[in-house]
Length: 103
Image (tube, rainbow, N blue to C red):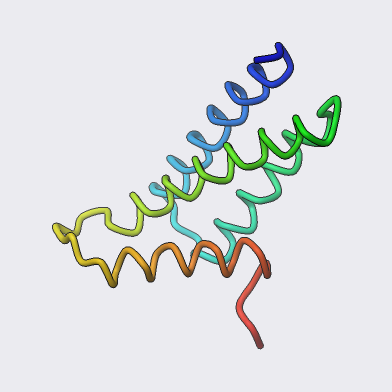
């Protein structure tokens, strides 16, 4: 793994984790949270040396942020409900891609 990629993943995951911890302490709604995660990810990849590296780092950070959201979604609930997992993933994917709920 190239040095830039390795550093971007380390810094990106650390930033996303701190952002996630703050959100857990002070929730501001899924919409704002997920849109801001996307902004952080795009900021991290903005200086990638090439498109392939940019895509690899973006996908890794996206998956990490998605996993954090799913953990938060189930925070405090003792459930293994497959439907709830699908709802969490669908919500994240929808808000990440469209950057908001339809009006």
